[in-house]
Length: 452
View 1: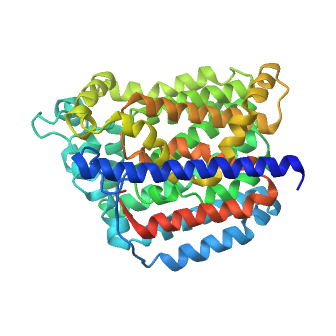
View 2: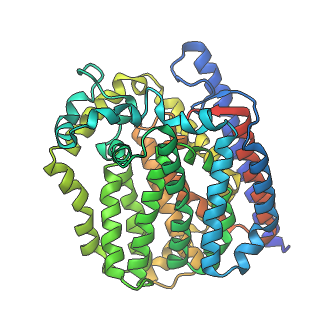
View 3: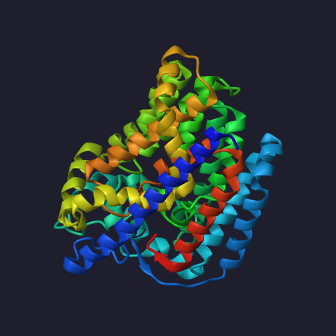
């Protein structure tokens, strides 16, 4: 290892150490605040979780998969054919998510996750007449309104709940089917991100990132929360736009239109996800083209138009949601704690390897942005721009004050792209960093019972 490489490695470790200290501070200070006045509304801050050391049926599989990916993942990612890599990464990601979820057991960890009093499934029976319910949706957002929606239904546009309504209509009702849907769809985010990296940076970059995308601690919350499904929708939005912008797909026009359709859906899954427009803009900046924009915008108008014609007013609902947010725990939870503790929470989601990758991203940003203006970029420059856009979107969400706590699931769409910063880590350090990722995920899942 050269002197430059050793210096870079020491800086990676230093920044990762600082991030670990921030997490520790968030835990200690959060516990103190919660014990003093209960304003955090969390049992184990900064996570929505409680202390509950345990093992479960998923433990052996999770341990075995972690060892296998650490031992063989980097080598396989480097030499498999591209199609085999995509299939293998998806299968491994799916297995990792399921094994982590099953550490809590099937009922507690899977089937019952989406059936609590806060969740979307509590509202499915109220969508017997879908058009009428959409017209009436905003009347039930506020806590003091008649028959107010459960927290998650009220806190999201109706596209989220409507997904589970449609699953119920085709015979896949109940918590187990909803969980299987979220895990299966959520796991495809790995495919979308790999395709994006290949299109925007290069195939080598995608191959370096693949084991880290598979073994991400974020998998804890993909299995099972609806936000894992949201993360996949946003990831495919960006993947299709990247393919359209680089024209590395047979039908780029269809990819641009499809990307727009998914972006429109994204805006009706969560009020915070229009921030992904920043990541979409980064794709256009990286590729130095506006060619996909007309079809993207045409596609993006479809879902909003359909909901508007059905009688749902997004802007009215958003303003009511802000009022509802401050009627509940959001109005009590202290901004001064969560504005930095949310970032500590993100460290637990993306892992210390991603923190090290982000350190390299920020360090290379000035030169990369200069080269982006000239068009003479390297794959690392293009990756840097993509990661910075995701980081900017996350910071905007953080500063908004509308994400106080529970960001381990809410920010999964942003975290998915932050994970790509691991492609910047040097070859010699990949297995140690992969080990750190796996150990973190296994510790969190075995020591805590997470709420999602």
